[in-house]
Length: 480
Image (cartoon, rainbow, N blue to C red; front, side):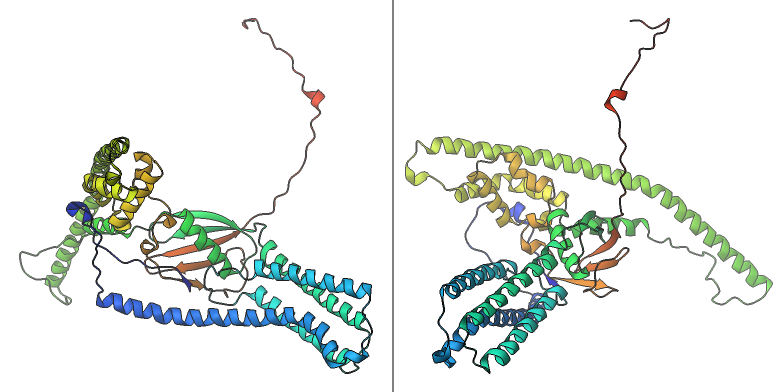
């Protein structure tokens, strides 16, 4: 499961009651909120334990790697200092080489491995685990050789010991280069075209990915989802479902002569009753068909009426916002002549003009089913931001007239705390042609299909520049 934040519903009636802005607010928790918070805490405890355990192992392995070359150089001076040969100029030069190589290795490891985690994956990263095992085996083998050939025999050639430590650092640098190839460079070349479809509204995007495991491909697609997909709006889906339920409502059939027999037996009277029931069933099917034929007209007029209302609300909103920004411009010009005590900061200016546009904005958001995506506080913050940066009314309205990507909204509006990866294949296996997996959250799912990018064969055809010769074809009717 991969973590993102979940939303809490707030009061959406602020547009009708907004007359002034104060600095106080009220919060309450329901029983469902308490249960949800408790479950989120239980899930986060397990994820945090696994994250800290992995970090602890990485720190221990890193300390072992960086302290091993230094231990190789220090132990002879501590155990048999009187038997060591003097270190000449070449040996002292190797000290400088070891120091700078260790510094480079430290910076490289910090840049590649010690980065903030982007998400919590369900399984271990295979290549990173293999590299950790390789480094551990490599260091242990160096320690075994050092213990048998140097510690037991108390080797007197200190320059050879220093060269042995240098060889270890060189090998660690090569392993780090291998880590860059496996973790970063291998996935750069696109190999698969990923089709991502949201299950509720059918919103679809296509992305190209390289050689990745299923879980890492899912992580990359989720990052692109929050950037490219418009925010999920369940209010629009609720409206379409209610309209479909109204059109598909069943028809009631009444028998004025009496009830239908429950279990008709063989006989002439029962056959007549069965024929009557059959004819009424056909009449009901015909009525349902006529109603279905007329339902598209209702849908057409409903959509036309909705578009008319949206245009009307939009026009009122644009006029209200432009008038409010005009007042702010006048205030800015007049404030220069007033005393410093009357000067307002952007936050106070936003609070001053917000009530004049609040009702129009609220009606527009309700008409377009966006009222749950924007709270009064977030709108005031955006208004203060636009005033601070001298933005136009059109720039302020763009966030509300055009639904933006998910990241444009606060994390409370993402409507997802965790993502669940559902796949028939192992999530640590690589992508393949035709692979299908799901990314499921509370309200919807992302259906992902992988298609391999085809091999492209290109050929070359040479055209001689001297072959571009033309003649003018004249006819009797041609005017020159």
